[in-house]
Length: 129
Image (cartoon, rainbow, N blue to C red):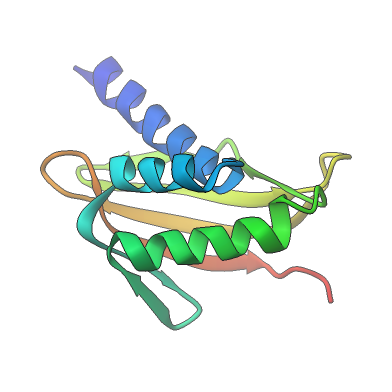
């Protein structure tokens, strides 16, 4: 059972990070729908993004600004932890030289199906101006 939970947790984190790097808009939408429940929400810097449409707009904007330019790739630090329905890890924007340019601690609250109900990103390393 523990191995199953660890594997599920690793898969959730990998899929979460992958959605930010996904190059296709439709593929990103499908990934959002597979990760978040229909009324799921992300909270970032005092702003809430609710439901698949707002989440897709948020992720599409971040992808265009940071990843599509080739300046950064979304990555995860090796600090994943889980307690019941809460998954925590650090997501990063890494340069092609593998330097971390930005980082946030992520707390995912999962529903009974294992989908993200709430997603909190708390910046721990701000992007340099």
